[in-house]
Image (tube, rainbow over all chains, first blue to last red):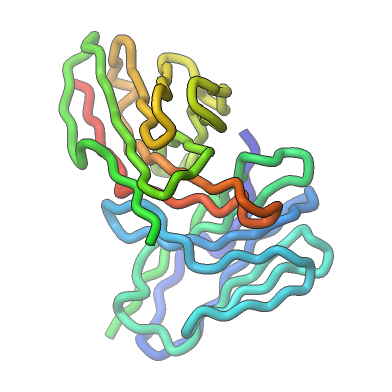
Length: 112
Length: 116
């Protein structure tokens, strides 16, 4: 199956730092979603984006739907220890109405 | 608040056993999905269902079957478990209400299955 290119693969940062990660594809997407997965748990939906250029925030998290519709970015400001986990992007292709394509994940470690 | 529950968090089965993984959602969602998650391979879709008794193969259906007799319940069946089916299994559901929000999938906590 198809997967999205997500980078970086992992990040090790100090508490209080800002974090950026992104997903890219050669295909155009209609919807971008960002999930966070804690160890041993299922992914939790953080942000959903529906329109090219859209910028949406959820607390310290901000995500953008790229203008070309082929990429998306997630930023976390002022990171805290509970931000630790794996962050996944997911996209919905225009002709694939029910299924999502998932990114490979970014593993985030936050040191106090 | 969307709630997706899975019958077991951890399961250990022997090779050749028939295994049932159950998933229940309480938000009247039409779509339900089964994924497996393996290190380095990400989330891979096994099967999904868009209505009761309807199912469609995902990317890796071999060795699995599914059952959806009621809207809220979606079962994944391993007919004869094998060691290469050791994995984290995740169930998800999504709502078909508006054109946009169709794609927001909500996940259960996962079942970590070990086949020995």
